[in-house]
Image (cartoon, rainbow, N blue to C red; front, side, top):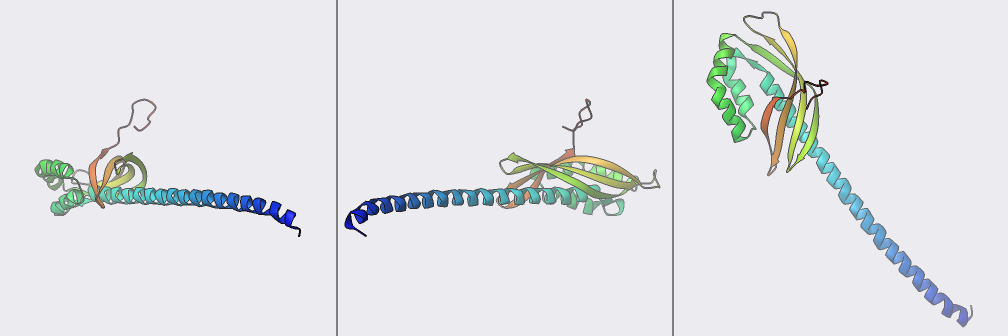
Length: 178
């Protein structure tokens, strides 16, 4: 190879190496960004799965009870909840206990499905479709009824708490759930 050719190839080779270096940096940054996005998505999915699990467990505890062991019911519905929700159950404790005992209510819940919606600030609104099989002194034959519930679950310092629980509003128009 002649010296003139070598002198022309050196800048071309240096330029090609510079382009490859820049390309390597850009691809590396994009890979890192994609890896971070993937990790964020995996964390988000894990949180949604955990929120669904907490809501499912809580719904089962709230729909399953026996008049022979009312304290177990109240322990179940107050465990893993916010102070405000615990207070709600404390306020209705005596009335609800009396109704359950006098009517000799026995109920069993079953969760059919859940749908999770992230609300921001580590809060999730979980719609739970469940059934409850109930029998009591006036209804000797067990009856199963569907329930559409909303369970609000919050993640706080690694702990998961149920902060609200109740029936899902159903719009009068078109029968669509709100």
